[in-house]
Length: 434
Image 1 (cartoon, rainbow, N blue to C red):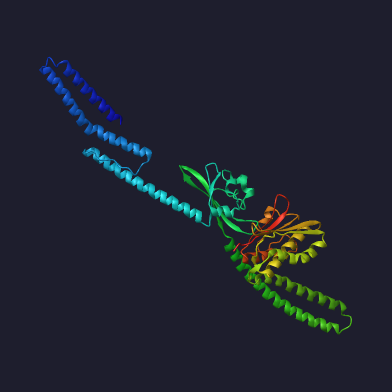
Image 2 (image 1 turned 135 degrees about the horizontal axis):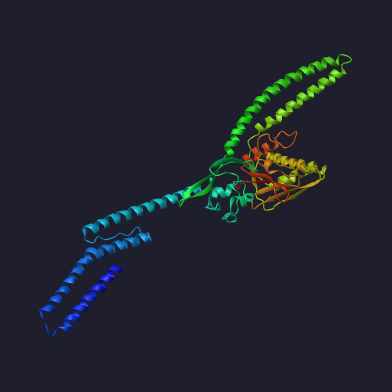
């Protein structure tokens, strides 16, 4: 616009000068006046030619620069009828078309990646240059146990790790770790980075390995248990039969009381060994859950008397707060009753003497919580609780929690066992809503 304005001003000045010359010499018209007027006319013609050949192409290029500055890649420049200038216009228009197509391709690609990340079962947590959380996909929100994303957005992982189910803060950049959580779940977590505007931005990938690990564990311990059970039971059966025969023979002879007592001790030890192995075998033989509608409040009420018997002789008080709006749930009542009794038994053993156990149902979250005032669980122990045959008791077999895990998985339940800052250890079971 500036070049065109200068051209118009110059043309106007020439016309003005031409007018003054004509008016001044209107009475004394001479060849000098004719020459001056002719020169002015030629200058105007030259200016018009100059505009067509120089000013207009430059103006066209200036318009193109404005389009680039505004990133308007959908507009095009017109040809000006000049070969060199039209070549520049043609190249410019092709460049604009390419930029437009590239922008569309990148936009479509970004939209596809956004949809892919949102729909991915793998959790994605993206950080900014200062290692603060900027966004996370729905899977990450679920896996990390976050109720409101706004509570962690703009904060560093280290400052919110206590509010997350998975502690990502200990994973170095460009490394992958397999982490166990207090509910027995297993996650593969990676800490990587990508380049954004020339600088690295970190992000986390969270992949659930729980089902794969559990299936591998189950196949492994089922095979071992079956083999051990077969060998031990066959061996103890033979030994017990032989010892019974010897004991009967000794009973017919005098002065063999000590030998008979030794035989009975050996027989009892064989039976104990057989029962010990049978406990492991029972975990493998857990029947498939047969689900039917059941009222969990009624199930707990039905078991209260039996649970109180476990508690009373240790001066442990049992409190039940039912939610009357709790809907019916799909349960195998036989298996679930055994799960509940196992949980109460663990709470009683954790308390020892003089304590409280609180059972609460919640219709809003479809959950059952069993809280106790026991000695609590360390962070290190939390990660191992649902591992096969892990136990914190000196004489424990690690079967109780393994049985609970298998049954709750058949019920499609989410569950967790951990000690909270208020000092209570809570076993939370969240039931499927379907």
